[in-house]
Image (cartoon, rainbow, N blue to C red; front, side, top):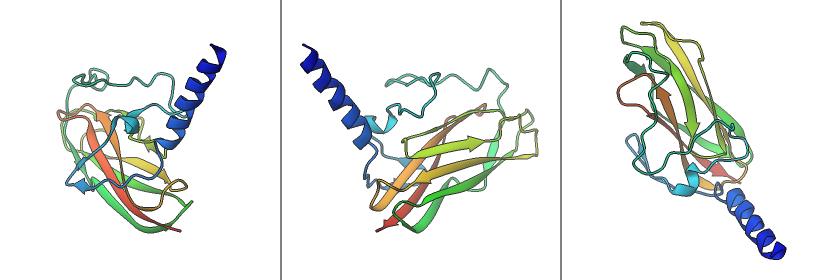
Length: 168
């Protein structure tokens, strides 16, 4: 019995470590194809992160009144980068509405990507930042990654994407 449990545990750990390996996904507009493995929690995720199941919608950003947002861009191409490089990109957001913009969470689709964002409310007409950090260590060739941004806007989450061509 212990041997069986050990094998199952090792299999789950092995799957978790390889689920974020090489992915060659194609980005069309602002939509990114994903599989269920890409949304699995990783050891770096906080304990408060809740996984969503099919058909479940996330709660709005802390019951704040809705506002509108403008992005400097929703997609970025790092171009050619060397395997092992750690790169990041800042997406600038502008609150174009009449209520404060509250970003509650930036949820990357993979453990190889991390996000930082302006934590305080962004007043109408003001700008904030969302930074995505990418570690290319486990990738080769063309990759496409994404992060979902949860905020008090009507069409949340907002999907930010980036691509890179990982060179040996």
